[in-house]
Image (cartoon, rainbow, N blue to C red; front, side, top):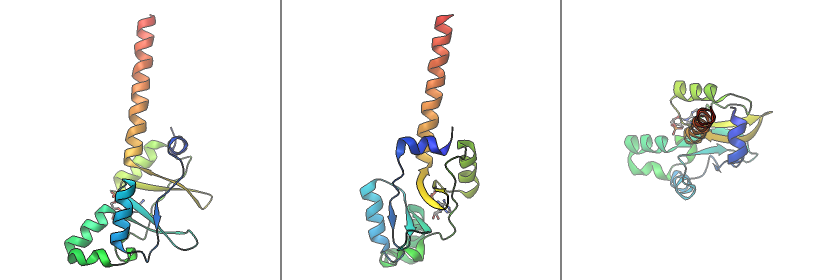
Length: 143
Ligand code: AMP
């Protein structure tokens, strides 16, 4: 199974904010969409960072609630690791495990094609395991 299989179900929409947006606005955006990270993109759409709830927790722990008034660029991670639609699920799970993050933007030919989270991957793996178990049950019942 590839990342593309997940995008086929999930779609290519990625919730994004601007580097100059306030952190508290980005937090509200995460809450409204029920997500744990937003991509940071500049005015022309280039990916310039990622802000996750963990960055906000770190900011509050270090600077207190005043960090919520800061621009997103102050807390976001700048070096964003990305994957490709043709990458296998085992590969992206390895990237997430080694990098200790749960979100991966997907780039196709230098353009943003979507974003997969650890939740998307677990959901797809579960569906796959259930389908395999069902196929085995049917095989045994038919024998
Ligand atoms: P997460 O587990 O995705 O909520 O994020 C944990 C930390 O990794 C935070 O500091 C994020 O900004 C950072 N992070 C999340 N996704 C990525 C990514 N794809 N590339 C680099 N850093 C990331």
